[in-house]
Amino acid sequence: MLDALTPNLAAGKEKIAAALSGHLGSIENTDMSFGLAYRVSKAGPDTGQRTAAHTLSAEGITLEALHPRRVKTDMDSEGVPVEPADSAAGLCQGYHRCGPLERAPLL
Image (cartoon, rainbow, N blue to C red):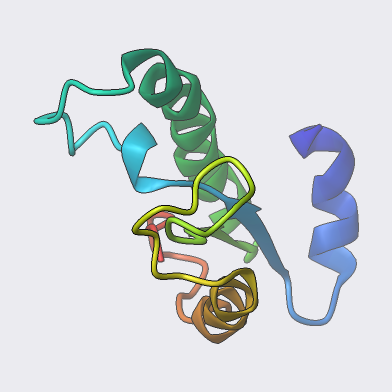
């Protein structure tokens, strides 16, 4: 997919792509043992995003990995302070923070 999208991103004015991620997939943050299957399922895409960021930066393209935070849903709302609209607003504010040479930070 990266090969298919790169020419279109390179031809764009802003040369920015974004991908959703999450802290539970962090390879650096492995001190919690809960949710192991979920965490492992997120770690692969996060690694791919980080690798893709290096590939895309050679073309002057920025790949941002954005974290929506833990958001209230029908499945998980007890004690969750973030409303979906607030999460979306935070994602929009986080977008465009980094340049093409940065290593896909999790915003």
